[in-house]
Length: 459
Image (cartoon, rainbow, N blue to C red; front, top):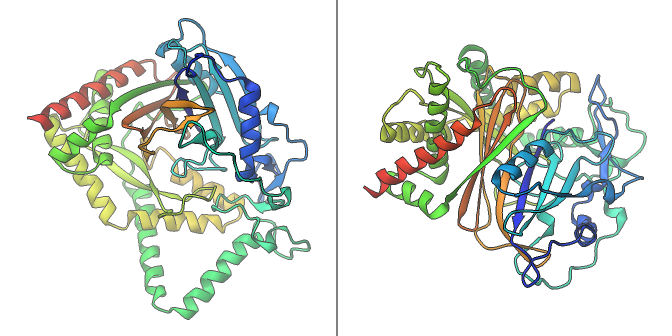
């Protein structure tokens, strides 16, 4: 289904405890979507096929009411009901004939709070950018000043290349020019990138060395795919469309206490907690633990620029030492594996493959994409997205918690997304319903592994 998403949980409205109306949410969203013009666009073709590359085109029948809905959580409105509702919400595919996003305003939460649940196709945004449809409703203060006037509709993209390359394409004159002599798959946008790269290399010959390094790094990633396959696991089975969802929160101060005492980074703590929890899950399933699990860990390529839509991420493939029984040794081995990859060429190799695939015809692009996200290459996705550490507000109400979603790829039954916000770090677990009846084991194991690491850190 390939949508990412999030659940934004808000405190009860001050004074009244009421939930904002659907009209209020829709009006604010309508005003602010001018900042994200592609959210008014659909794909020129519902399917990618042959040699024709799809494009983002303005949807002439765009109706925001078709994308924003209201629902009420069944009583008593606790975590169990919330997780069940989210699992069902994220089990339904986005309509490829419309702009690829949806939002639901949910009330009926046990504490009187309310929630915005979103899903947005990965072709439109990536998780690192965090420019999802729900985030445009958030403010840094409870009563923000009036918004600046929205840009004219003419600034919206009319025929931007849908390669997931980042920018909207509205600033690319070739993107909407008629009479394009290039084949459909080799769009003006791709041609412009190739031309710029060629000129840049001619002006700066030393960059040929960098290109050679990128080619070697790419071959190393492909070699790993073909020769050193990931282990067989019950995490990698054919999956359906029905999902289970669970979330596990931790105090960010305690996460930092662990990494401050044991060394490493917040991401190292996340990977170590995941390793211990997955060890428990597979052990209870009776699987061998000698061979490591391989996690696909997305890496941000943006630097300081977070404004563009599309995808600007690559991946590292980290071996998780689930066979290590000692908690501290397991932490140190996980940290060492991640550090070695970050200091090597794996990220360069992965990003080079993505760049090469971006210039390929859709048929070849599809084959490369399937290879990069096959169970042969990795067993599970674990993505950690740092969020703002200040309170945010929506319609005058404080955002209390963010629950993140990562999509499941073919033959991957479990994925974990982690997001930090305002002093809290939350694991969001997305799982295939039929293949993961024991999701509660993973939830409990995450808490237990974290507690064990925190105890070690304090000792």
